[in-house]
Amino acid sequence: MMSIRSPFRQSPLSISHRLMILCAVMSGMLFLRSAAAQERPTTQTTQPSARGRGAGRGPVSSSPRDRLPFTNSDFAKLNPNLPTLFIAGDSTAATGDPDHRGWGAVLVDYFDTSRVNLMNYAQGGASFPSFYATRWPKMVEAMKPGDFVVIEFGHNGGHLDGIGDETREGPMRPGAAGPPATLHTYGWYVRKFITDAKSKGATPIVSSTTVRNIWTNPNATFNEAKIIDQKPNYNPADDRVERGMGRVLPGGERTMLVWARQIAQEEKVPFVDHSNIAADLYEKLGRVSAQKFHAVDRTHFSTEGATAQAETFVAGLKALSDMALVGLLNEKGKSIEAYKRASK
Image (tube, rainbow, N blue to C red; front, top):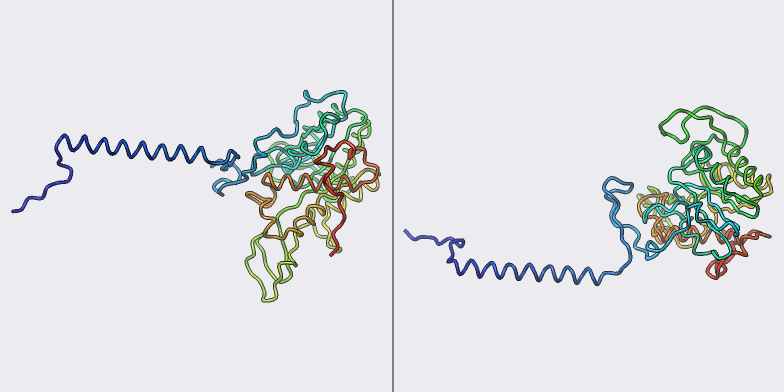
């Protein structure tokens, strides 16, 4: 019978030789891997945590801006000799992380910090009721004459509909744990924030909410921004992004946008229509191009999206007449054009 020689039965010399070759191959692979790593751009690409928001949804923002300092969020770092621009908001303004970057985080890039403090006290998950109960008192305590306060809430609910004096007991945001609190209307909170800021000599600035990545078209059906069905006469130029938050009113605008503008007018304070300004930008770019602004979901932003939202906010500020804050912009901020409503 013919014997079959096993390939594993080798002389000691052959085994040693094979081990040397294997070590050499592995060393070469490690070298190539190291070299490739060194050639990668130094920009930060962050994968969402397996347990965090956006888990398993792939790579997110890789902007170099993720490596630089963000807007200050520490009261102790405020220069008492300078006016301060405070930001009261939720995760759409908060520093967050690269796939949940808020516009307030990068707003520092547009102001002359030798002449004005920036204080981003926005918090992820914050609603009007929760911010009013936990963060607002600390912000009011820090305010002084000559300061500015941006008020922008709505994404996390918690408030009652309308602008009246109705109240009820409930959680500070839908589904939140903890004992119930006395909840007020959207308008009550905005007015309360305005009154408190004015009492400290600060200028309140009411802002409508940022844009969510939700689109419509009369000849197509979307799942948020992804097209799932279209008619033969579908035209991408007719894609429209959601403008503002809340219920759609007969005129097409949404409740929170209308309430914010109405209260600002009644209280005679500046109003930045962040919703419409950002929506105009989205529609100018087009639905497909605007996807770069959203890393993992319809609400939160990549760093590029946060930058776009910050610049649309600055454009809104510059559209206001007699806004002293505009005089505190740096060269980058001054280069942004004042907002002019796009014609349809």
